Length: 452
View 1 (cartoon, rainbow, N blue to C red):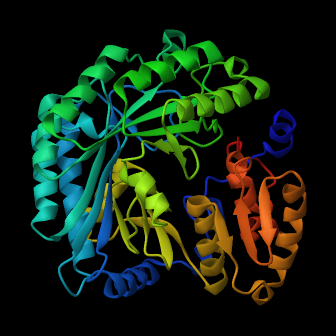
View 2 (cartoon, helix red, strand yellow):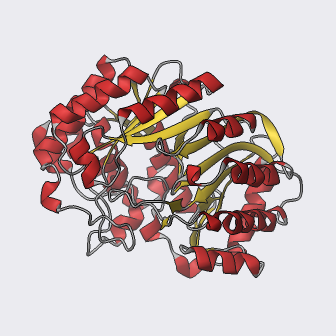
View 3 (spheres, rainbow, N blue to C red):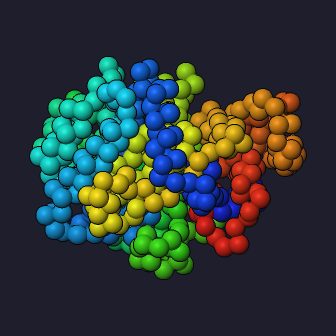
C-alpha cells in the first residue's frame, strides 16, 4: 500500500462538482444564463423532490490556521443583523424567479461559524425563509457548530425550527496539534455539546476528524479516535488536511510546513485510522466518510441514493441547490454559480437588487455526461458509461485505467468501472482519469491539494 500511495498521491480535485471550479468556463457564463438555468431546474424538480438551500455564515471569532474556507475574523457581533438581512434579500431575488412556492427539502448552515450568530438572530433568518416556502414532509436540516460556542439555546432554537442533525468540528484532541492550528478545544466541551444535542432530541450528530495536521502522529490520532468513540457520533468525516496556502486568504501559514507529517506518516494516519474506525463499528461511505449502520448516510448508500455536492455527501438528492451568502456556490445541475467573496461586495450587490454571483459555468452535453459518471464514482464507487464512443477521449481514459486495474484499484468490465475496496483511498485518482477539462488543460502550477 505504501508504494501505491507514493505512486498515486498527486494533486487532484475533491470532485464536489464537475467541472471543478478552476476549470469553469467563465466566457460562456452570465448572470442571465444562470437565472435561466435556475428557472429550468426549478420547473423540472420542485414539485417532486424540492430544493436545497445552503447558507454561508462566514464570521469566526478566531482564525483556525488549517481552514481553507472563506471567512471573516471578527469579535464584533454587530455584523450579524446586517449580514442576515442581506441573506434574506438575496433569497427574495431568487423567489422572483420561481413560478410557485418552493418545496424546501434540505437546508444546511455552514461557515465560517454558524454558531457565531445568536440563537435569536438565526431564528429570525430561518423564519424569514420558512414563511416563503413549503417545507417537505421529511426535511433534512443541519448545521455546523463550534463546540466552544454552541449553547443549549442554539441547539434548542434550531431543533424547534426543524433541525435534526448537528455537525461539530473536532479535528484532533492533541494539545500540541490544537495549538498549531489555533483551535483549543477540550474533549469535555465536545462531550458536553454532543450530549446536549442528544438530550434535546437530535437524531444525527456528526464529528469531523482531520489527518495530516501539523505535529500529528499515530499515538495521538489513535487517542483522538478512541475519545471520539466514547461519544459514538452517528456519522464521522475523517478526511485529509488540504494544505493550500497559495490560495488567497485561507490563512494556512500558522505553522512551519516541516511540521506536517511526512507522506509515510500521513499514510499510516489514514490507513490505521480507517482500520480502527471500522473495528469500532463504523462503515465507510463514499470517500472520507463513515457512519454507523442506523445512520441515513449509510442507508442512502445501500439504497443507491447517496449524493455529493458542495455541502459534501448528503442522503438526499435535489436537482437545485441555492447557495445564499458571501462566497456560496449554487448548483442547478445545468450550471454552477459562485457569489462574490467579500462581505462588503456581497451586501452592496444585494442592496442593488442583483443576485450576487461573480463567476460560474454553464454545463454542455459533454460536461453533463462526465459529471454524472464522476458523481457515480464518488458516491457509489462504480459507474457504467453508456457510450464511450460519443467522446473519443473517453476511450483514452479507459486505457489509462489499465494500470490502476493491474494495481487492483479498479475492476473493468466493458464500459463498467468498479472501485475495489483497496482502491477506495484512490477514488479521486480514478475520477481524475475522466476529467477531460483538466486533461486538455493541465495546470502549470499547483492548484489542488494532494489526493491522499
